[in-house]
Image (tube, rainbow, N blue to C red):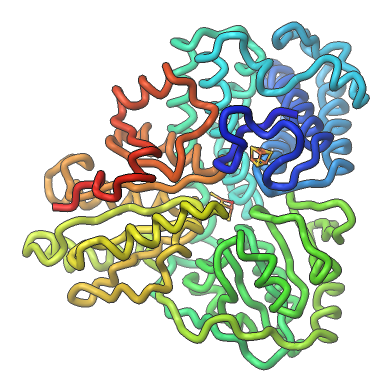
Length: 536
Ligand code: FSO
Ligand code: SF4
């Protein structure tokens, strides 16, 4: 195996014996092969689309395949074998393999056995023999994985976009082609354009189904009833679970990236949605253990479970772990009765927090406060907005974000989205004339909301986004963050600081391009100098 797609990868070499995330080598190789198979499928599907054929099934499969290979989503080798078989069937259905080679490997006669996999290799190092082209292809692939994840959620709510689908095929079909770095760079930026479109689509899907998020106080306390904990990003799963638990005496709590659900008006109608339990994904071993009841994992970030709670863990959608019960969608419905029955026999959760937090500052709510925010900026009460969105992670260095938030002058406001918020959303940083100093827009995909806010502020002030008193200090962990970064670059945002380390897959030459063209600032400055982000 060779994997370096996330921030936890082993420095300088990538994960090669076992993933730091817990991914086994055979699972990593099956994931590579699944990606390779959907590259072939994308080529066949593009051709079929050109001939006027319907490719909905292919798009659905490609979307799930991209999502499932993202960090901490699925660790189940059996799942990947089934997905590869499905790729093969779908390709056969379109008239067979299109003979395209990637660095000497021919899709046409590929043997899926583990032995052959090891012998031929379709891993990331085979993307190109040229380090810069390989680096850009990796960036493209990880952006596509993020795109697949967000498109999956929009699709679950019945929303589609032909341009996003078109780019998914185009991007994947490019990976096995022999392309120079100069041809790949525009393609990578085009991925950012597809990212903006896809996040806007998901925003429309979420607000269409559940209403416009409202400023909401969420309890972090445990109630006295048995409960089910839901983690991940899939709001439709949460909705179905809440429907099925209504009147059962079982409470439902959110965890990690499911916290923003509380701000949607539709979810407020469920009295059994008790609150949020715990914090970011990497605390799950302790928090799932003390929760006492069943835990439903809808997407990443899943940590390989420990004995104390593994019998109470359920996965659904693209998430999976060998030996953990998986709840499939059958005839358009997910049946959570086993989860609910288990909850009834479990003790209530042990308290981990005794406080509330305020959320719901997506673009609808923030733009409702626009006059107040603009007034505070022009009066000097708010000197700077700092976007601190992104991912949280296990590495100790990430307490940098807590220290950074604490060290910000009291006239700065933090705009956040994604699980990065858990580094500072319980600090009680107060407010500036009624504007909370931490404005939480929602999940990582709601970075879109932050961009809408920035664009509206720019419009109202007659300045460009880069002229606003706005700074970006983004924390990344997995591939959705790559897509968010590409989306920001597409929108022309400059001088973004990313950390806690720069992506391992970016070659020195490509890094130079990113620094010179976009002013990206990186890790070593972050680790050593908190003052690099100038707060005037
Ligand atoms: Fe976090 Fe995990 Fe949402 Fe990611 S839970 S790290 S960027 O999967 O998706 O923010
Ligand atoms: Fe390593 Fe990250 Fe890949 Fe897991 S996803 S194997 S931690 S690089």
